[in-house]
Figure 1 (cartoon, rainbow, N blue to C red):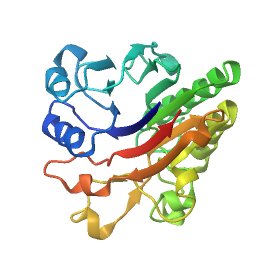
Figure 2 (figure 1 turned 180 degrees about the vertical axis):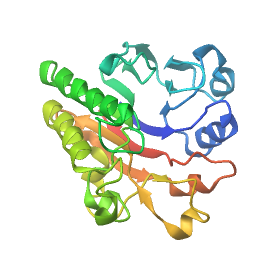
Figure 3 (figure 1 turned 45 degrees about the vertical axis):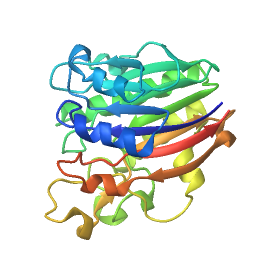
Figure 4 (figure 1 turned 180 degrees about the horizontal axis):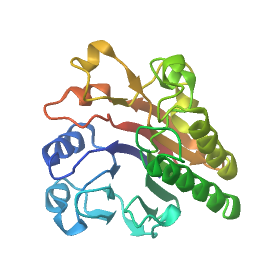
Length: 262
């Protein structure tokens, strides 16, 4: 089986229904994983996506916040969800392909603005979320698995526009990077994007606050595609569609793609 998979923090699937439809039409990924849908499942515009051939859908949602969905042309079955850190948030859903590959779609908490759990509850929740992910993969080594999503951490120095200036900024602090790397190590995950694009600045998110995000180019690579070690060599063709960030009424994230031959 060969397929192309994309992950995209859409920042409201109902508000950006047209953009999702445009991406599905233009790029034709076999599977699209969305985060931050900000919608109960019953209000996600599923009929629009079904009309474009994405007839298999697994999702978890809640009103106004969080929410994750997997849209697929290929048959998938619901493989459940995990409430990491017991937050009661719709931040994870899994689906299984007919060839036995499990896809985990994750939306890790952003963590607020202050990188100190003693004064910022949200930062503590982020670290706890990652710790529970680590513990899960320590106990259940992933096999034939792909993990994607907005993990809200840019781990490498070339995953941000300025390593030095962002060391104390949430998403690139050493403690967050250490926690994310612990998840990778526990599951023996392979960062597919960086396996394909091993060097150079690479971003998937640009702040809405920049007057001209493209010219300023102060980006971060917050969105990831990982594969379990046993299937990592089947991955190829990684790319980030930077141009999508410039569409009318965009998300502040760009979609990330990878293909698999399994």
